[in-house]
Image (cartoon, rainbow, N blue to C red; front, top):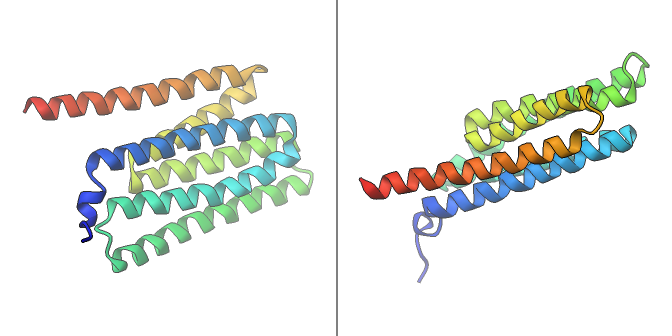
Length: 180
């Protein structure tokens, strides 16, 4: 006997999945920032890959939030594909500008990080505030990296703070719901 999907994906379970994705995307962002700082050429390839990874997770989150109908999934897939393909196109534009010599490799990585940041923030308006939070983190990280030499520790502390704040927020919301 199969259970309805609404029972399988309770709100609590959706929170755990979204929180796990938040943590994973923050870790992947920190890794990418470190790679970009160490080797700007490798950083470019990493961020291209991350556009695809972020797209997959955005589709997953949107699907979890839908009613799991095939028509919903088709719409989600179409919207997300268009959003992330456009993001990939703009990242490609930044790469071409860098290849023309008008933008240095170390700066191209930061510009690409800002593009991915904006794409993630905007997609978060559609799929959930945690996604926007990851985008904000990446944007702040790009600015911090531009001004600070030892930025990875600062960004690690910010990432840990974001995770702690989202868990605390969910705990407070759950506690308030139980009190009602």
